[in-house]
Length: 225
Image (cartoon, rainbow, N blue to C red; front, top):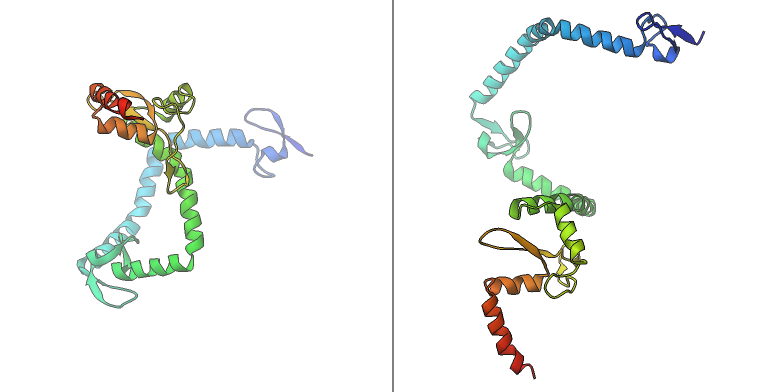
């Protein structure tokens, strides 16, 4: 017999829909019944759970009080007895069993032994976080999202809004061209567009003053030959 009738929903279902050979309710009906029972008995369950945990909590509290009564702790590596503030952060009591200098030395040794894998992990982590960090930076500094940045980039055909050229400055970390910089008004904070690194630097050097730029053009034009 490969099927059974659930005594709750009265539906005929395969045996795989039941928890065991003697189970009369299907898994779905059993889950609904357990959920209803838990809601009906929630206060009693929580009170019983608290009652059972009370001795353990008292024991852990007393043990922690005994540990914290002594302001010092022995480093597991150099065996020096130091103040807890001089131990490395982490561990069950918020401080590790080794001092900061021993912990730093062990980290240096580990990274030296696993230098390649450590660098590969760091590169992979930065690659996965790069877009998230960029989006967060845009929102904090300019009040726009990465989607709005992409829309502006598409509107400018992926080139600088001033010189109409793609970015040529190479990012030393990624060895690829940088993203176009967000040009904004330093007084109002309004975003005006996207500029390459050189045009953005030039705009900042002249203080966003068009008259100074016109004066500079007038100075350079007759002297270009």
